[in-house]
Amino acid sequence: MSTVTNIPGPTYAMSIGRPLMRVFVLATAMLLAILGLTFAPSGGSASAAETIAQCNGVANTGGLGLNCEVTVTNNLDVATGVKSSTVTVTECHAAANTAPTCTTATTSYDSLTTSVNQCNDAANGGGSSVVCNVMVTNNVTGSTSTDVTDATVNQCNGSGAEGTGPTLNCDPFPASTTDATITQCNGSTNGGGASDRVTCTVTPSTTSALLPVSINQCNGTANGGGSVVTCTASLTNNSLASATTPTPIAKNTLHDSKTDGFVPATDDGGSPLLLGVGALLLAVLTAAAIGARRISARH
Image 1 (cartoon, rainbow, N blue to C red):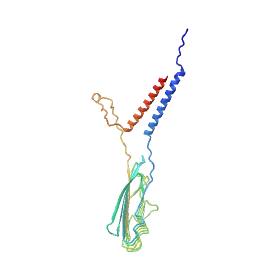
Image 2 (image 1 turned 120 degrees about the horizontal axis):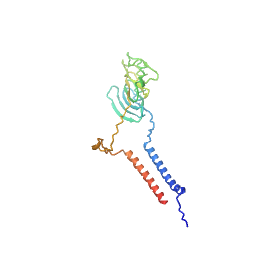
Image 3 (image 1 turned 180 degrees about the vertical axis):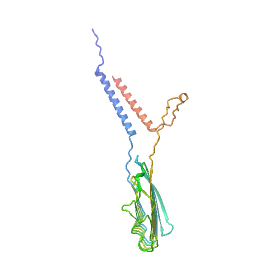
Image 4 (image 1 turned 45 degrees about the horizontal axis):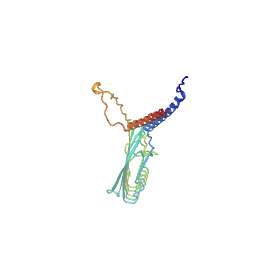
């Protein structure tokens, strides 16, 4: 009587292979998902540009003094898109031509400050004094000198009517560019008074195509008789070279420095990110191995 020996055929092999395949496909998918979440670039939300407005439409009673100042520092990295600004504002009030009481505040933004408006339509009572200044510095990393041009100016037009001449002490003058980068001291200090009562200056200033900023101040201001206005604006653009980080030369840390001269590895605590990925990878592979052993045991 012959004995028949059953030899496992393709059906049995497939019954084991398919569960194993499902386990490893699942493990691979989990690993890819983990790596994707870990190393995916983080996209920051776009931030709207900041507009600074202060000391507008105030101190319109006669005999008041108004002193206001805005200092802005913008930072922009063209390559990375990272941007920020720091703004300091000072506002002072008192009787005209006396020491004022001031408040100062500094604010940091994760966006650029692209517009400053101050001291407009203000101090229109008779015998008022106005002193307002704006200073803006733009630091643009990755720009070139061709991105920077001279700032245009519109100032001291329709100002200083009546009274003892000369009433205007403005630099530059005449300056009447439409839609200028800096607009100040227009339609101001009319109504008579001392000579040189309109003193408005724009220091040598520039504008950047990559970070345009506008300044608008001291317009329609100090129009009561016997009033004076002194306003200054400054806009500076610094083009900075892109920062480069040299790639360190890799050292062989697997050998003994006593035998072959290589520098031994140092224990710096490891990267938390890489340690986390390693732990997850180990967990996935362990789960896959346990699943495979259980499937094999059932057959």
